[in-house]
Image 1 (tube, rainbow over the protein chains, first blue to last red):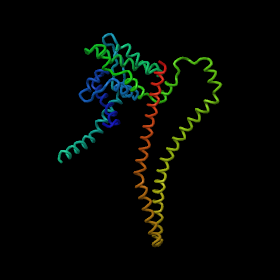
Image 2: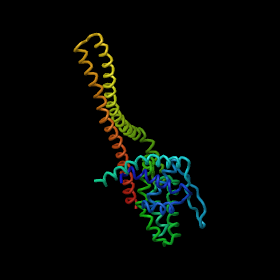
Image 3: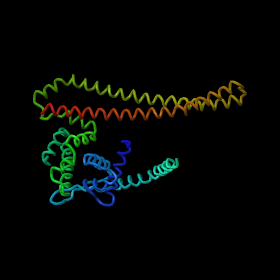
Image 4: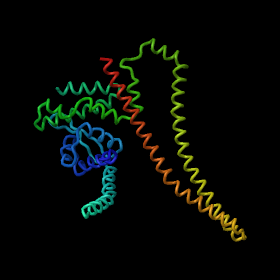
Length: 105
Length: 205
């Protein structure tokens, strides 16, 4: 996949994984595994970037006697998700058309 | 490898970055290892699953802004000695002017590239505006009964406007290409800085 597209998709995928409830690093990786295998070393820069951009906030909560970082989506993050869904409707329409044409041949 | 050794190895590779950044990264990876162990993996397996310290450090460094990276590299491992400070002050006229020259060279390169891009668009704008003015003028010339000269003027006006529209496409493509090239160059510089860090590490050991 094109590197630029993949980068954008990863941001969206991570935001989607924390949309309904706050989540933590390992859970995010497990949740998106069916769609994309992600390692911690890839996830870390993404989370940092999203945090710096104000798309999510981080708060530490105690878990089994240690601190675990939970990621919470912000309004700005929600907007980004919605904008993505809107934008990709068009892309998917093109995709449908292309696939139909390819199959037709 | 044990968690402690692993984290220490990553820390070594990130040496020079702000302590806050290093701690944040190490906390993240420690949590990742603990979560995997809670999931039933042994400590060794969990550490292995995270990746090698080299991979992790490189990802973090590639994502660090270039100025921060250069600063991290320039930072000495220990404080400055007295004689080093004296030398720095005495050598100020020399190193400062060299630094200034290097900075200005980079700046002038940026200006040259920007000027090049600007030139394309000014040419296109000039063609477009010239065409419009000529077209308006030729209407008057036709009304005034300019005959074949006025017709020629109409032709030239349309030619100018057509060229402007036509040239806009390659100019835009060229600009995008230059922007992408600059981005790639930035990435290349970053990689160089990271690699020179690595070499520095091995000579220190």
